[in-house]
Image 1: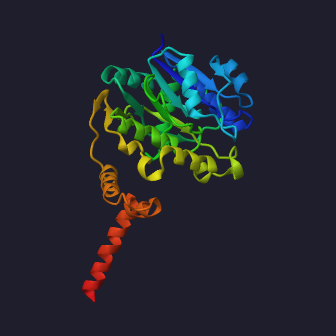
Image 2: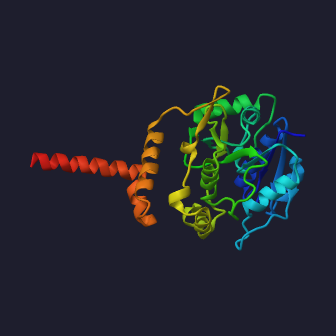
Length: 309
């Protein structure tokens, strides 16, 4: 029995750059010890790529009216076709290292219900990778020199016990909203939400959005709006990595260190409780930390002007 089953629903392999980065990512997963890999969906080139990479391919995933795979169906198939104690959903452009399996082992030993996640490093990669004996150390050095740590607003992987997330809405994969809900669900269920950014380096291979309508990022797409609606709306479920209640640091699960981001997030949650009666659009203007700080600056600035007058 393997420790971890990683599953993903890749984009079509027709675009040359997308083909390269997805094959890089998936092949990196196959190099990990104690891991099984499943590709879900019926995109062009997916079956052939799965065969070439030696991973399980399951084409019969449920999709929405746009043909986008549903995460609920992906989870169901991953459970049905694996017996590992841990499952991990990961974006198909993410390169993983051995530190992800070590972090998974630590979390499995420490908590019955948890979700492991972390920030990604963005890196330009345009060629097929060579997976020689030292590929991980070479990649990490390249990330240190050229990579950029992504802000904690997006999540590209979630690893959790197979008993978690057994009943979720029919979110569309690859559209915003569902990853925020995953974190919200874990916090609401009192699971350990463990930020592994310090101990786990995941690498996102930069790309454009030609595969989407008009080549634009999906934040305003109808499928995103539907995801957000199914999640219960922006106000209640917009959780990010900042909302983790534990961190994995030097192989130990510890309480998070205080940061300005966590402080302002606490202010936001406090204000949401106070102004719960406001319409969502009005509430957003009141409680978002950046906007709130700007309002404070404006108030103090106006107060100084009044004093001077």
